[in-house]
Amino acid sequence: MRWTLRTKWTLAVLAIGIVPLAVLGGVVLELQRSGLARAEKELEAAVVDEAATRVLVDLDATARTGARVGKLLGDESADVDARIGAIRELVAGPLTGVGIFDGERRFVDAVIAEGKDDPALHVAPARAGFEVLPDGRVRWAGPIEGAVEGWVVLAVSPGALDERLKDLSLVRFGAPDRVYLVDATRRPIAGRGRGEPLPIFERPMPTSFSAELVVTTELVDRGVPKVATLRTMPEQGWALVVERPTAEAFAALSRTRHALAVSLGAFTLLAAMAGLLVARRSLRPLGPLMDLVRRYAQREFRARSAVRSGDELEALGSSLEKMADDLAASETEIAKRARTEENLRRYLPAEAAEAAVNEGALDLGGAKRSVTVVFADVVAFTSFAERTPPDKAVAFLNELFTILSEVVFRHEGMVDKFIGDCIMAVFRGDDHCARALAAAEDMHAFVASNLPRWRSEYTFDVELGIGVATGEVLLGNLGSESRMEYTVIGDAVNVAARLEAIARPRQTLATREVKEACPAHRFTSLGEHALRGKAQPVEVFEVVT
Image 1 (cartoon, helix red, strand yellow):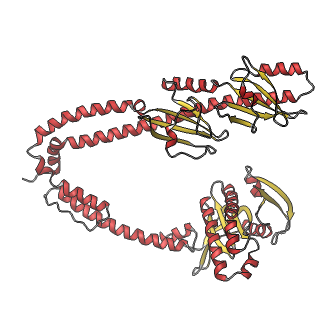
Image 2: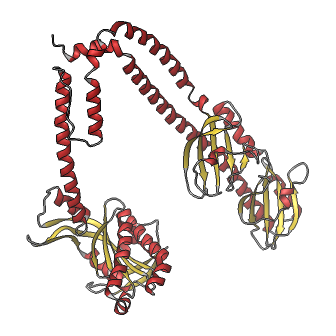
Image 3: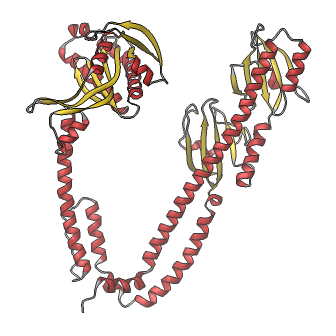
């Protein structure tokens, strides 16, 4: 009697039901853990953001108070007692007082909020802004504004930030020690003792807190697994950390695991009693099929199915064999296309190469597009080429163009062509003008970073002159049916080339249209210039970096 696969699997579920149930349980647990991990990450990120907001509110208030104190001290028109009284009114809440220093940063006097004098008010300021003293105290320092030269120092109460973070930790997590603040030396400022070890920094973490960053990780603190999130405060060079035990964060997972274990045990007994007689016969073909799939996953597409059960499993094996043959043929074709496209990319822009490989239309013609064109040229390259062997000059250009091309690609631009020692790039799409200026800035930066090595290797100060213009151009295949080029033509191309020609070393020149399209950048007008091919003078702007 030939059994259908449906019949076999009906019996197999009873015989080995533990396997799918265990797999399902594992998947459920993993999904639940993944969901809890996401929720925990979002919760900790929200709490650390809230903590940052609270800390920044206090810091901003301290800075504003310091600025007002500086103005009061610098205002000699007011009575001294009146100014001191006004300062006392300002110094309240989390502040312990104000330290006053002369122009040489020597201590002059202190205005105490209440209680006894604070030693932190007597330490000369190292710089303007916030700083953390060796004992973890936070201070703000700033110059006195007005006719009087000097400095003012405001000291934050030792427990002010601590209370902020502990209150937030209690509200959010029911415990006071889940949120803490660290300085640039990775030592606690608030929420933890100054000398307490911080296991989060035993994990891979940024070397400084100068960039905006949020990181979530898992760690072990004195034998207790924890989940932690770190958020940097770049302006101060500090970071906020939220930590809590994994058992607390994933409590629901433990309950689910226990319920699953009980269910798994009960179903195991039932499955063993119901399916002992048919399990071996029904499941025998599954092993070879699983081995076959694993071999296909390892790209062994010549492997054949050994299942001869005369049912749907044998048909499945045949289908897998056909699938493997199709995959092998597809991989061969994909590899061939990839090699072809890689070779074409050496001569064509990426989209033209892709169209050629995919048998897209390569007809002559184009379409009008709004783009930004960048020309970057090596200043004084001609004299360098005259005194340098050709192979060495070519090696230098290849190295330079490799760097500049990567910069263009990083900013989602297209390298149109190389003209001698000049590269022409085209940027289109959203924010094409801003991306073009960013690419120009990076070109100067990359060249400057490689300048010492090139100066040593080629005895040549490598510097770029860059021209940037934006406008409507014709983009497409230009030439003849037998020989065409994917490029752009238009006034923006000509103007960018002319600007590059008059640019000085390390200078980026742009048109008014570029300036108006990029309000976030700074420009300096160089006046109107007569450009070859333009009937009217063009106002030229230098991009200020």
